[in-house]
Length: 455
Image 1 (spheres, one colour):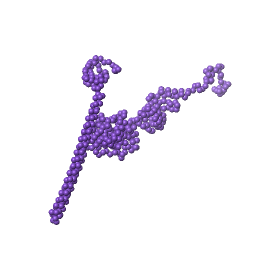
Image 2: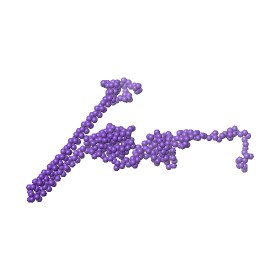
Image 3: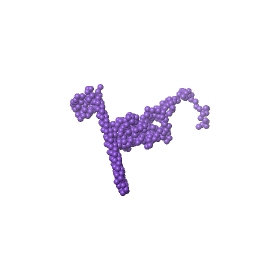
Image 4: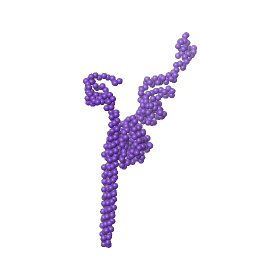
């Protein structure tokens, strides 16, 4: 430095001719170089689109959850928070109830919402961390229904001691219904079974199950329903999920007929079983619980009959001993009169016991005959219903069966082993096939294969 200030005007060197560029910059409005808010927003969106994955998966803890049809919430970790939105169309597909503090994985796209100046994650899918969505939803439903008191033992309805008509809500083509029918017939053939055929898994299953239970309850007196068995065989949690739906739980809870539930295997547990009046591990166990054992009941009648006869015999022997003692005491006073009196008393007692025994045996015989008549009537009615149902099914099958289709000019082709051919895949020239028409069949050899579907 030469000892002068850098801003000393005497020492500032002025060029002979100012450069045009500098003169032009001095006159330019500073706002001309600035970006608009929309331009900045567009740049933010471009950067996000170029440098973030799609879809983006983010793990965090739910907070500030707000359900307004669309879901608005935040995901947070130890230090930061991310705003999220999930449209109602995507929220309807979530199988659990989001709640504050729940750790989840949100899948979606990151975008900048200009009107509010907010960076948001637009969530398309939400999954819980750790337990699966179905397990979480099951636990949430259990907690809610337990708080309502639906699992309480004191509200369980007692099963009938001698059920005469049991309704079975299940799939008519499943193995569970066969187990129930077989067990019921072995225990007591006189117990009437009514099978209500419903879907037990998949779309619409929950509504069919609930509707069947409500219909049986509404017509319980007209049908004489003593108990309802809700059952199906084993499967995955997804397969059994229809029995965890609230609509089924409500139908069982509101039902005035005792409900026995046996869903899946012994290790499986469903809401229907917890709400029902009795949970059984298998369909067979459910049948045992509601259908009385005929052999046990017959043995019980025999025991009661034996006890009745034994009691009457003991009373007669006691009376005889008492009479003998009296005869010995009074014999010297008036032997003949006392003996005649006691003999008449003994004869009266024997006559009374005989009449009582005869009446009891007659009553038991009438009850047995009445039961036999009812059993015969029930069996004949059941046989008649089965025959009518079989005839109706035969007519339906005849109306929609393959022969009617063939009579309209159609045919079907199989290989020589009888397997139906629905595609040219695997066929080649020289192969022999069999074609079936309405009035017969013929074999032919393939000359050539043409690709393309029928017009």
